[in-house]
Image 1 (cartoon, rainbow, N blue to C red):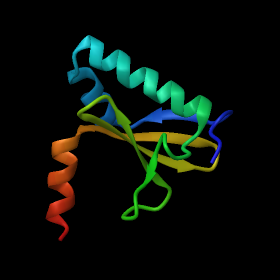
Image 2: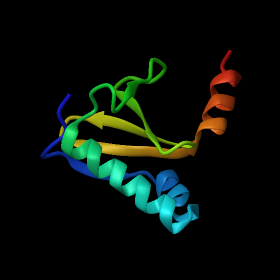
Image 3: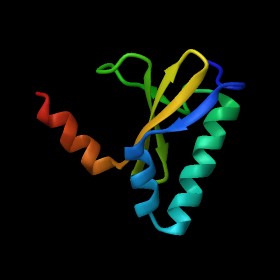
Image 4: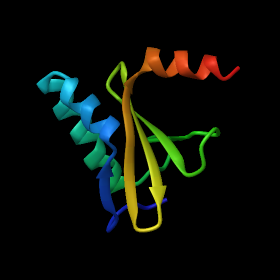
Length: 94
């Protein structure tokens, strides 16, 4: 799935998560978002989430994960979360 020429939108949740990160973490996340926009959401860069339609997970460093939703014409960063929190949330649905 190619991403170029699509508008990027950050959800309010993603904005809050980004603001709470340290400056080096913010820079790393923003570089990963830019990488996704340039390279697309193809493996090994991203994993498709089975739970939500057109939603992908991108790793940003050791602990952070970026959740993207892809719609016609734009990409939405749904959330930026830690690996542990994401793992905990996936256990709740079981």
